[in-house]
Length: 103
Image (cartoon, rainbow, N blue to C red; front, side):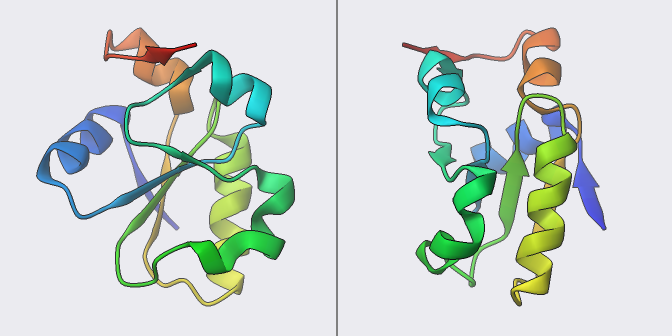
């Protein structure tokens, strides 16, 4: 399975043409998130996967990387070819001192 670090994600976000999907719950996402991320909770992934663009790489993240790894497996099973798990999730993003949207 494909993975990247939060620094790799930052670089990809700067280059554009990716879809960053946060698979945490609404309450978590509302509190803090990476700029440009869209919310698609893990529990809704199967029902709402058609909202995602198959033509762009999909980077999935959560709090620590566990739920996003599961999201990656589910999306691959649904036919998505280019799904990358962000190792360490938003906690790793914050440890690197990268910018967070809050509230």
